[in-house]
Length: 108
Length: 91
Image (cartoon, rainbow over all chains, first blue to last red; front, side):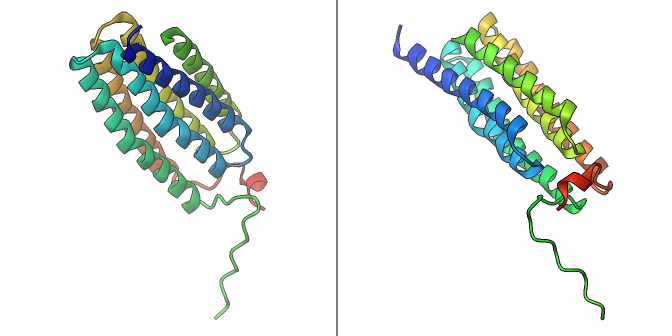
C-alpha cells in the first residue's frame, strides 16, 4: 500500500460520496434552479475528484494524460451547459416559486 | 475502492434517472440527462481503470463531447417553447 494508492482511494471515496449527495440533491430540492445547484456539485467537484482518483491506477503513462484531457474538457463544458440551461429556462419564463413578480409593463 | 466507487456511480445514475422520469418541467429532464451523461463518462473511465486499458478513456472523452453537443442542441430546441407545467413552478 503505497502513497499513490492511498491518495487515489481517498479521492475516489470523497468523489463517490459527492456523487450520491448530488443525486439526492437533484431529487430533493424544491425547484429547478436549486436542482441546478445540486447538479453543479456533480459536474465539477465530484467528476474532478473521481477522475483524479483514477490517475494513480494508470501511473505516469498516457492514461493519466487522457484522464487530464477528460477533466479539462468536463471543466470547460459543464458550466457552459449549466449556464445555457439556466438561460434557456429563464428566457422561456420559468421563475422560482417565491421570487417577486416583475411589475407589469406600464401603460404609456 | 474502485468497485465501491462504481456502485456509487450506478446509484447516482439511478437517482438522476428518477428525476428524468419525475421532472415537472422539460429543463429538469434535460438537467438530469446531462448529469446522467457526466456520470456515464465517469463510469466508462472507471471501467477502463478496472480493465487496466487506456482505450476506454478515448471512449469516455468522445462521450463527453457528444453529451455536451446534445445538451446544447436540446437547449436551442426548447429555448422559445412555452414552459410546460409552469403553473406549479410560477408563484
